Image (cartoon, rainbow, N blue to C red):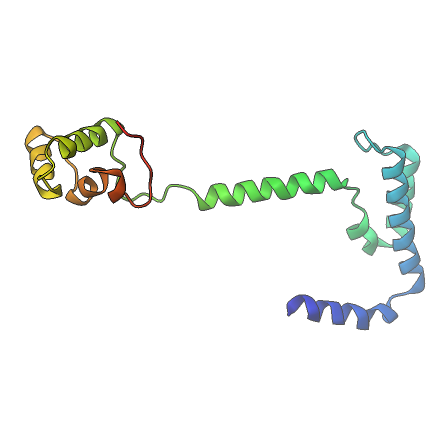
Length: 157
């Protein structure tokens, strides 16, 4: 909705812009295209004539500064990918919570569950407490067999 309002205001304001300012914007954009076409597969380097052109254009029309950015499409895609990676890295960060059980303790819980099929999670939990392992009963229940883990597949031991 906001973008639509900005678009409407831009259309309403476009007749109020001076014709020379619009021509200056077009000249700047055309010159940027010329620079990009001239140096297609290498890093964009501005010559002294390019710099002079942009400086004079800026001196005559200071509002043209927002158009004076030479960016290759690959650079823009790289920026978007980096932003996407940073966003997902932030979303998938560790938020604390209960610490995970290490693999050796998980293997011990499974072995106890397989060797003693009548033992449930409370009994295995009690035996682990006697052995000196501090683990919650719910963690024992989730670790005792692959079918009880919350959709997480573990290797058979």
